[in-house]
Image 1: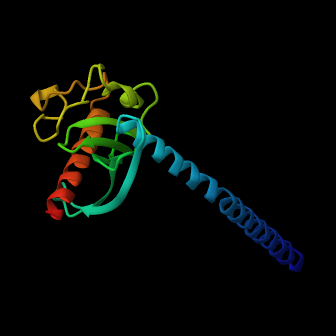
Image 2: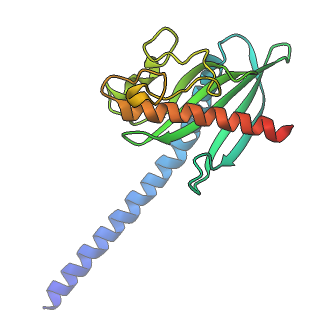
Image 3: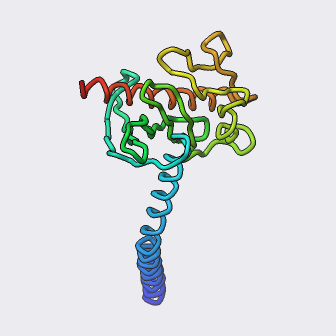
Amino acid sequence: MEKLNSSLKNMVLVLLATAVLMGGVLAVVNAVTAGPIEQQKQKQLALGIQTVMGGGEINVEKRDTLRVDLDNDNKEETYVIHSIADSNDQPLGAAVESATQGFGGIFKILVGFDDKGDILGYTILETTETPGLGAKADTWFQKGEKGDIIGKNPKKNKLAVTKGGEGEVDAITASTITSRAFLKAVNHAYQAWAKLNTDKQ
């Protein structure tokens, strides 16, 4: 009986030591990769800002973080608003980070607006939508495509899917949920940008 207790004790000790060792290895790997991952995210964001603002030489004048409940459901969401100027420090508009829940999880986008609120461009920063269907959002709503939103203004245009008479944007084929999530993120980006500008006045 004593031998059984000793064997069980040894097994527990070995498992515990293995768990501690693996935890240490994971902590080291996380510490080593955290910096490069963050640098890659910042690089992707900088490229995204340039893309959604139409390219060329631009400067991020400042970044504002806004926490607001745009759905009136007692859940505040965070929006990051990058105020953009050209190389002569003339204001161009803003690039706004917005996220919502898609079909497969978080759907995070970056939308560029000119100083009137017209959409200059967009890019997807993060998505877990189904490849081949929901993932088409990166091109579907671009200039000249079926769901083109470029040049539209969320205040003047009803940026919602046409299905059911909701709005004026064609949904991605077989991906209405993703399309609604994308357009919700765009509308929220605009509302956050407009709120920030209103609060400043």
